Image (cartoon, one colour):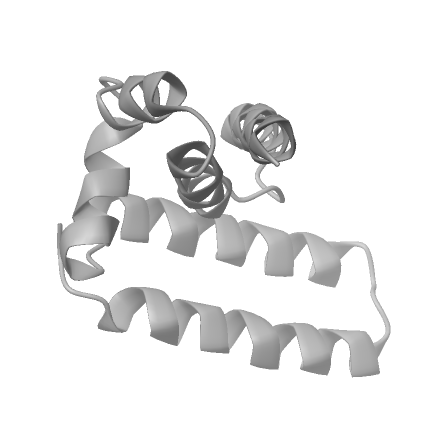
Length: 117
């Protein structure tokens, strides 16, 4: 099982790195999953992730108090707006736009109701 957890953690880190570049792929949820998987597989990988200069503080904020830093909240809001705007520009069907608006609104409400990290 240790190898399975470690493999899943590495996949999540890879997806998080992709998410840094692509606005449609979330970064932080994949890092949180990676921390979860590494905690069950490798103390070395877990320590590396939570002490990482960029990723570590976000993970520790979430683990300690469920907090999201204001800069991350703003970045998420801009990404959500960009995705929805792109859907509008590309002329997505109205039923898709409605579903997207509801889901993205719920995501933003969740993000903005978390404490600040």
